[in-house]
Length: 336
Ligand SMILES: Cc1cc2nc3c(=O)[nH]c(=O)nc-3n(C[C@H](O)[C@H](O)[C@H](O)COP(=O)(O)OP(=O)(O)OC[C@H]3O[C@@H](n4cnc5c(N)ncnc54)[C@H](O)[C@@H]3O)c2cc1C
Image (cartoon, rainbow, N blue to C red; front, side, top):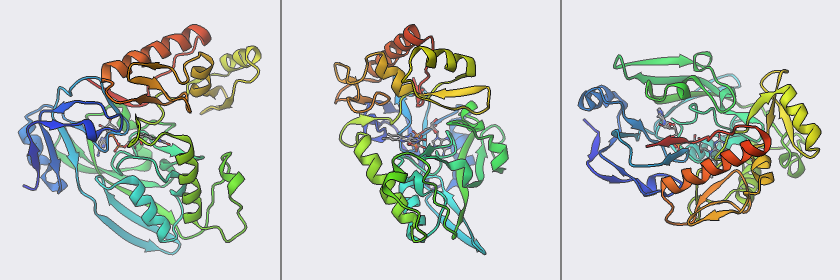
């Protein structure tokens, strides 16, 4: 077996919030063919599958074993202008994106600089700058925990939507081992998002690397770097509300941003705006705080515990609810 077992593993540098927590044990798997043997050892207990820990908050030590995949293989094939690549779950997402743009391929350049692993990208259908990963995912290979067997699920099987997928509805059912993407040699710049169209011009010579570089520059200027200041990116999802609710609020708050929802009957509100209006931007309680630059980002100034962060998150949720009668929900998985 190629798996490595750490009986007690300090997770502080394995989550971007920088929260202290201990895995008992952490098992690292290099070859996914070993997963049936590893799960035999778990003896029916479902583990927490950990990627880079950029969308997880450890409110306490995980009560289950922690599993981390280290497979990083890339298998490429071409069919005309389409390029297919099957990628190991353990590969760093940003490194993969930069590999594709270095090859001149189009499809995921707007998703550059999102922290995490390839294996986690389908879980919440990662998205940024007008692109969601669902548009490039061809299929997802999984280890099904209940049956101990491997399956390849189609894009439709994954049931992707905004920050959602079938995986997120039952996080212990599958371990994602590989993701296959369909990319294109043909230029397909997606510059609709404000910020990108201001700095890039689709004059026919634009490369996917230039788009990725612009995205990286914008992200670096906006979001705190988790290496410098612990955070999990956007801590709350933008709430999706019925059209009538959005209209009633917009009549009361003229400047409230309202975006298209998943259907004509719904609208997406800006959680950042709601939190900012409720007065939380820059607020700090001990070492837990709300980023002064971005109301959606909760930060760890050093020694905040998971309980400190969750305590602050609950206060923000309650105050947004009191002011707007809107319930905002955390985006990261809360463990413990
Ligand atoms: C600074 C910052 C910016 C961010 N910006 C964005 C953004 O623009 N857009 C966006 O969508 N997200 C963003 N995120 C969130 C995060 O980067 C993504 O959700 C990312 O896909 C998480 O990857 P991870 O490997 O760190 O997963 P983890 O945080 O380790 O895990 C997240 C979830 O996926 C599960 N999981 C992980 N790997 C597997 C696997 N192989 N099989 C089964 N389950 C698995 C975990 O159990 C957990 O439930 C940001 C985070 C940070 C810190």
